[in-house]
Length: 149
Image 1: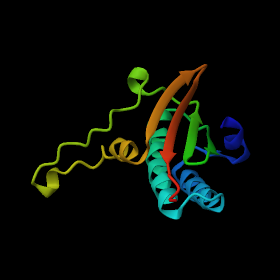
Image 2 (image 1 turned 90 degrees about the horizontal axis):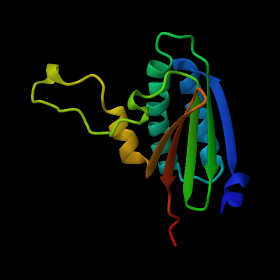
Image 3 (image 1 turned 120 degrees about the vertical axis):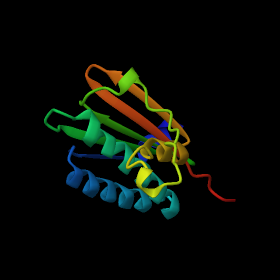
Image 4 (image 1 turned 90 degrees about the vertical axis):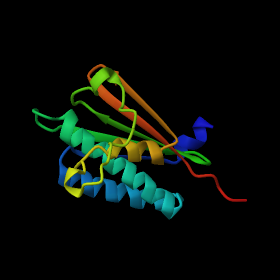
């Protein structure tokens, strides 16, 4: 199975800035559909990647010059694995947040500005794994896209 995945491998890298991340994510979404990922699932992947990479830009490189973000995608028969690597600060506790949505009250002005990103990532990805090794962060996200019979 790994052999099949390597045949449909895509790589992309860009500086960890908002503008470069946005361009890179859009380019990757187009590459995924060109490689056969259904458009609706490619949109889900784009949303999850935008949230994850936004966290890299805002948090991993907070207080330090942005380096390169590397993305590697491997498409298998019914699964896409996306690995995001950076050299920024590690995730707190060396694990991704659990993805619980923020508490929302009834008053509009009390709505939280953020806190939905990890909730979305957990909802869209079928599996999440984080590793910190030799100064690198690696966040792996898996997306299932069962082919209809």
